[in-house]
Image 1: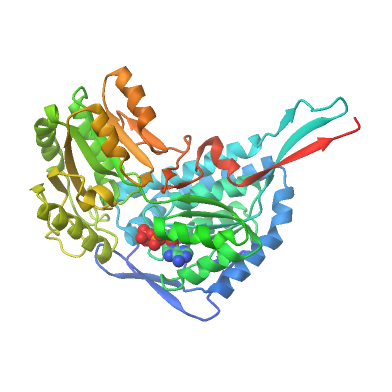
Image 2 (image 1 turned 30 degrees about the vertical axis):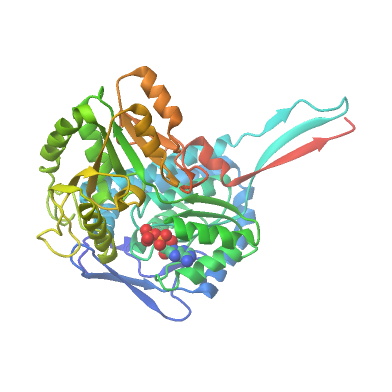
Length: 488
Ligand code: ADP
């Protein structure tokens, strides 16, 4: 075991159901490895549908007591959880870098970002206000209250092993709901560490459950979660095909569904932009987490007049990136999560170059071997290439050229996805016009980093349903109930 932790109790090799650290009924286990060197780190239970059913039952049984608590009391528990997560920021970051690969500095940042959702919803728990509406008759009064929706099932990805969990669990708990989480098979250690801290913070047995499983068993665990009549809400972050499958499965019992799916973010640089700021924004948006975030810039549209100058400035910035294992020294870019991720990056570059794009930087697997890849820049990219239609999820910046504002908008909207978009301009008319015209749920305007617990995160079109974070994020876990008082 190569993860050094100040508090070794944060490394858990059991799942967490009904306040107990348990194994799979089958006894099956799943090995967790470090993507930077392939080393075995730990193993966790490989659970199945029956284990999942037990977790759902535990959540159902624990729900009445939790929902009955005053919001202030639930808020107190969440606040303690937030404090514990921040106290253990360093250990959580080490676990994350070990199982996920991102540089330690980024992992620390994610722990703080993940914790911010717990803090935010601890505060927001107390503000689940209802409404009083003028009655529709002389003797009638209308009152609207908000109530917790019920048992929540959450399925999360590997690219943000802490934040994608807290962004769902914190609002659910704040609203008064119990949760069963299925973390990604690559990164369950962060999820289990979060549960250990939640237990210490006083989250009662059954209110937070973590069901770990392998990629092979994910379909049966997911099916149990989406078809159980007990589960009232499914919250998923991951790929679009899996999101569609879960939505179909959830339709049988008409569950409320939140989906945060793939993106294909356009990043537009207009002639009037501050090019240095645009390069800095692109570096943050494109190469963070080795390009493995759903809001990473995927298609970079640069207006003709500044195209060559932008390429030069970008080359200088990319040339400074240090690639290496996240736990060793100051690095900017870790390995890709697995071989399949590396193969996709290669496929996208090969397709682009066959169709006429030029590699002006990188383009190859990195000399470090494994799943390390060189930060890459492609120029002369066109809309018929795979990089235009698919999310690369890797460190490749494809630069398209455009002439007019309308052309940039048309190209940017030419996608079934609609999560994030970015553009750089200093013209106020253009800023309003383009912001209104882009078909995405979020837009960074002269900014490459948009994620914060205070703003609603989510997409349109096939990028998803619902919003996470902010005051809107709480509503995803509540139902409105309208009370009509007659004979008043
Ligand atoms: P990625 O390709 O980024 O791994 P996925 O959508 O496959 O994205 O994975 C996101 C999450 O969805 C992971 O926790 C994964 O285990 C889970 N998952 C994958 N397939 C299914 C499925 N059929 N049912 C339920 N969950 C699934």
